[in-house]
Length: 309
Length: 309
Image 1: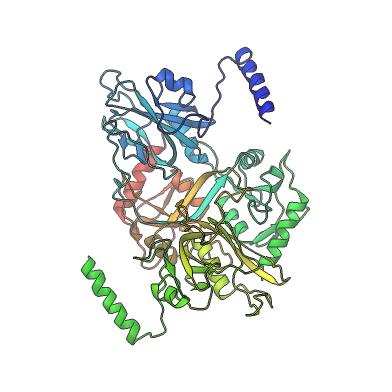
Image 2: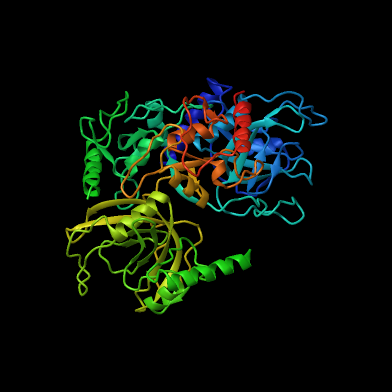
């Protein structure tokens, strides 16, 4: 497997060097070999590590794939850094000397990339510029775009804001005297809430969403929103113990959130010919290249029937 | 505030003692003063602590409020314990000597209470019976019902199964030689997934859902399912920095998941008179006792307009 990966990498490197010189690889999530807390003495070194490839831009990303990384440099008037929670002022046109914003921000490029990351729940690497030591940067781990909005910044121009929340609960390593990071208790307005629903996605489920263009397979709803449509997926034969269903497209249906809630509570199931049974009527939508496995359909029907009491 | 709480507690105690002798308080979540890892030498001691009040039943809960606690005693044929992940075989009629199941389980009482906990995302306290030392129990922290299903158990009778996942990432303290808990890596089929959406609720948002009987305020959808309907809520003026909206019913709308996704992406807003603007048409549903605050509505409209680019 490692050999194959190695060979594929060589083929890829060749293709990149010879066919698409401008093409860049976008890696979401951790970069192998780069621990949280690693410091870099220049943007060039940071770029070479793969953590954040652009050497100038604060946001690494594309408006189709999403943003994989941001550099929070400090000093920008609309950024607020609370350690585990960052309000990131997005991409703006600013005066290079004063760092003051000089025009309205747009929902394009970097800002749109972060909206796409929000839409898809993609992890964003956060690197902080260490203000106390010029040209020093520290990779601080993965964050998620919890919310985005647009507002007037301190300059009076429009800005796009992104609330970034650290994904894991690991404290950020802060060498003494380096960067006075506020403690994670610095958000006094945090309301005590409990989680009622968590939606996760994998590579296979993203593929299924693409096959169906984010249209619900059972009710044909498509939730269009800025930065792309939203859909969820569900497994016919659940993954994990004790069902041990596979994470493959033939075990996955594309659903809108409403149908997903019903699906998870055994309110409907699907016959071999695609007919819906239970509280939903009609037939499941098909898409080229995406067929549901009959064994997994049968597995779901069995659990559906058992759950009916 | 502490004084007031104390006084209310006294009033409550008096009411409970004098008016509703059979009434029980159902506390969800942590019990103050009882640390994770605390051991008890009897079910009576466990009950007295408030962790798990019934002295016989494995599930503490009601079919209306949900289950607040379970005791995983070990030895039941359909339970599987992987430490951070437990497959709990639910409530069954069993032979007290052999512990073998002697009839089909029903979706009622304890089992229904756990389905309600799943529906509402309520935290469930887990206490383990320590097999190596008879009559010893250890409180092991908060779990969430990740999924439920029904199946045939090893006995051939019907069982309800509940996959319980530990809420926090704190490792379970396991005194050497006490209870050979498997490591949390014991779920090899765990698929690498990322979170695309997390839905949280507070006391205030639960109240708003009740006001509206779980009917979406914008599209009137009500997602009925076993154990109760499902709805979500959203804040007009977002809570947390920098918006600092309050967690109060007049700042909260009751939405179905689909409309919630649109709401969070600034696809629609609400006028003072309840008219919907943006991609949704019509008027917001009203409910007795639930009025939306005009300042918060104006705050949302301002952010909605800014986001339109």
